[in-house]
Amino acid sequence: MLSHSKKTEKVNNIIVSKFGGSSMADANAIRRSADIAVKQGSSVVVVSATYGTTNRLVEITEAADSGNRKRIVELLAEVRASHCAIADDLAISKSSLNELHELLDTTETVAYNLEETARRFRDDEMSGFETDQSKTDQAEANNNLFLIIQRLRDRLFGMGERMSSLLITDHLNHTGHSATCLDAGKVIRTDDRYTHAVPQFDTIEELCELHIHPVIDGKQGHIVVTQGFVGKTSEGYDTTLGRGGSDYSAAILAWGLDADILQIWTDVSGMSTTDPRIVPDAQPISEISFQEAAELATFGAKILHPSTLIPAIWKEIPVFVGSSIRPENGGTWIYREVGKAPLVRALAIRRNQALLTLTTTQMLNTYGFLYRIFRVFNDHRVSVDSITTSEISVAMTVDDKTLRDRALISDLEDLGQLNIEESYELISLIGNNINHTAGLAQKVFTALSDINVRMICQGASRHNFCFLVDEGRGEQALRKLHTEFIG
Ligand code: ADP
Ligand code: ASP
Ligand code: MG
Image (cartoon, rainbow, N blue to C red; front, side, top):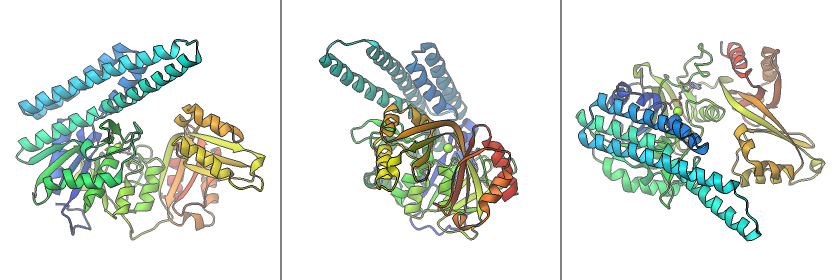
């Protein structure tokens, strides 16, 4: 049972534990993760794909888009070989091995289907049409093909989790424990925003009641293993929740089951004052509030998917983040309220940012302009990370892949003069009372006197102060600020 917990009084006896890609990297990692789940008394185990698998599946979709058959064949062979090696090392049962081969075959079928559909899509786009009617027909046919491509992509992306969940379930069972593998699509109902699907919380609560409670209630020691990252639409199409989405899946299930604790097991012993890969002196954080941790995740700390804490906050479920490699080292507890509230708790970096500045004299002494801007972002389902306004302009940061959305850019251009600057990194200081502390900005900019700072955002949040720096200067800024504020 949870040895490093402050809050062990359990109410529903439900712990949801998520194991990320590095915790599922190879047979040993899977053994360690299974062992942790058993010792913790987890009822539900949510797993990511084995390390590197989702990247390979994403690369397959890119190779399909460019018609690179050779690369697809290579990547599929790598996916097959890595899973077969783990299955072999874990000595999984004959029936699980058959199931694994079926999943690998499906992965190949979906990949080649995708390649073929992408080819048809490209061919159709290139062929010219004479009449207005044939142009309309072609546009409709193209939209249909694009929808099929999106569905195939999400089906393919989720295959990694399907295989890893099968491997760990088999391992738990053949080491004397009792586990069942649940298709996450039965519970994680989403809308149809492929690759960034939005969970339908009302339905999910009912589906947890239907598919998970009967399996775990009153059966101490039984573990339901399920896939992170994947969901299903009400029409039965596979979806995914965005890269790194297994954290979010686990939080959604913890919420749906009213769990006592959500555990996120990864490759580091909890959250640190910044990414330890960038600043080796980063210090572990033993406790952090929901608000601060949510800001950290939103503003770039890869350790948690940005939406993870939302369901946990709704039901005040304590979240533990720890290392599956060194579980004995403890980790970070995330609670609604914590004992200490330092001015600067942690720093984060978010890369690949673009700055959009919209200028128009229409803003002078009028109202409704901001509404029109945000309606455009809303219609295009794009989120703005930070924003500043002056009398006649509004500056906003977005992920630079947003710029590929030509329709969004064109709609913004209709509202005023749009200036686009790319290649920035967003640096955030996360803590408490940040908007009420005199002299903070001065301290930041003195520490960064040799780094060019663009848009600054302060005042809106008690927990966040952020600004843009040129691409490639963010890590240096993080190191300097870490020395200045954390030491
Ligand atoms: P998983 O595969 O388990 O989901 P991730 O790679 O997504 O793991 O997240 C863990 C990584 O997050 C760590 O290896 C670390 O480099 C990175 N990270 C970024 N910011 C932080 C932070 N503030 N504290 C700890 N780790 C961080
Ligand atoms: N496997 C997915 C990814 O790599 C989801 C996750 O690991 O959280 O993005
Ligand atoms: Mg992750």
